[in-house]
Length: 273
Image (tube, rainbow, N blue to C red):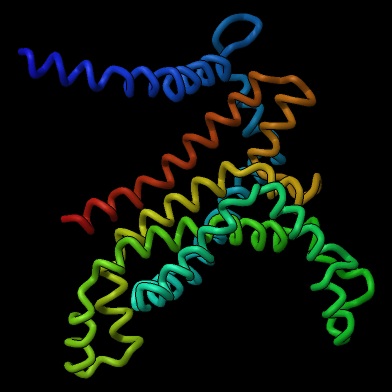
C-alpha cells in the first residue's frame, strides 16, 4: 500500500502537467468547436465541408506533409547510415552539423530561404544566367518553396531518429549479406532498411505531424495564395476572431492526423512483434 502511494506521489506532478498543458486545452478546443448561439451544434464542421475552399486547404496540408516526409526519409536514411558507419570523430562533427540548424530560430531560417528563393535571389538569378527560366521566374509563393523550407527545418528529426537505430545494428549482418552474394543496394534493402524500420517510422511520424501543424514557414514561403490549415486557423483566430470555426478546423486537423497515423502505429507494433 505504501509503495502504491509513493508511486502516485511521483506520478502526480507529471499527470498534473499533462492535464494542464494538454488535456485541458484539447477539451476546451473541443467545446469551442461545437458551441453556437443556441447551444451545442455541428454547424462549424458543416461549414468546413460545405465550402470547397477549406477541404482543398486540408488536402494541400496532407499532401505537402506526406511529400515533405517522403523527401526527408529519402535524404535522411543514407545520411544517417553514413553517420552511423563513420568514425567517432567524423560522426561527432556530422551530428553537430545536423543539430546546428536547430539552434537557430525557424523564422530566421525561413527568412534566409525567402532571400534565396525570391525573384532576385541566388537560385533564380543562376537559372536565368544559364537561360533555363524567364525573367519573371521565382520560387517564392509556391508549393516548391514550402517543401524546400520545411525539409530543411524537419530533416534533423528524421536523421536523428534513424541514427539512433542504425548505430545499434551489428555491421556483421551486412558483412554476412555481402558474403552471401548480396550487392550493396540489396544489403541496404533486405537487411539494413527492415531493421531500421522503427527509426524510419518514428522519424516519419515526427516529420509528418510537425509539418501538418506548422504555420510560420508555409505562411512566409507560400504567401497568402497558398494556404495550409494551420494558417487558416491562425487567420480565423487573429483576423476574423471566429474562434469557434478555428477550433473546428483544429479538431479536424487533429482528427485527420490521428487517423492517418493509425496505419503507422500498426506497422510499428508489427515491427516490434
